[in-house]
Amino acid sequence: MRRGASSLISLVAVGALALGLSACSAPKKAGPNGAAVSGTGVGQPSPFLSANLTTLSCGPGSLCSAGGTPFESGAATPLLAFSHTAGAKWSPARTSTGAGATITSTACAARRCLAIGVVDALPLLLSISASSTTRTWVAADQPAAGTLLVVGCAGTSTCVGLARSTSGALSVVRSTSGPWTTLGAAPADLAAPVRVSCTSPAVCTALGTSATGAPVVVITRDGGADWSLAQISKRATLVLGASCRVDGACWVVGRKGSGTLLVRSTRPGAPFAKVLPPEGLATANDVSCASRTCVVVGADASGTGAAATFSGTSGTSGTSGTILRLSYAPTALLATSCGSATTCAAVTSASLVSLAP
Image (cartoon, rainbow, N blue to C red):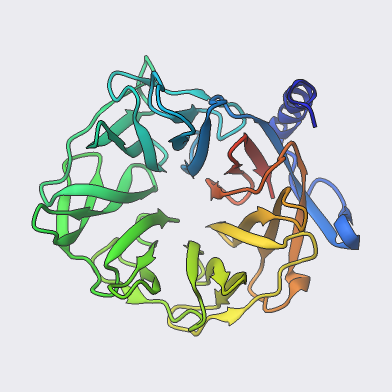
């Protein structure tokens, strides 16, 4: 689809989404290969034509942020996109610092967002408050425990992160509208964290690799004080996303050899079991849960962006997932974030997609 035509479609359809389109407002229709279809997704071109957007976070309010890496040097501002309409409309973020920075992680709660990046080989931490009258991101203080590597936010303003000291020690840190508090050492299983996501101030997942390079997912249900190791498939070769619902169910997506890893645990401590994706979702790159709804994003067999929603408590077969109808998602969806059970967003290298599962 040409970019000009897609922009017109985006303006019309995003307006429709703002009126509250959801899976409950329309009957299911036939999708690709006859798969059931529920919900919608409408994309708009990325505000950065020369960047690869790879990270995304939406809070339970109206704030969302996305970041990425430039295809070539020379960016005048950090590659940071910002939305104060729950992902319906996006624009380049205004910043007072960090020109030319790469953004590696973003996290939004209802009242604030954080962005982690690198500028001139130095760590960068940016923050914005929902009450900001100028909508400008400003430099924020790093935790006393070290440099913040990854962070997840939820609730009104609670954020949980992992920081590394100059000696290499990895610590769990937490902030609620104030300075960072060190909660203790990070889980021993997680040597190299690459991501944290939170569905509530208490429930967060962290993923990365162990000291031997094996994929690792750890889960906290008390805001970062204690963590448990998720027993995912022993044949998993790469973990790309993990998220736990408020009812205790958890999802993990990634790769198992050359195939797709899509597994689910029904309750805390329960083993993870394989889930068959619905037709139309050939690869899974990320998952995000809100309330009792989870959205998995990736690509179809042709490489075009695809997404599926999973609801309820059952779900060890493909019949529990339904494909979302997407407009303007020309490449694989790389990341997703759900601020609520009815409003999510997803990002590709070329577009930002507003989802109504």
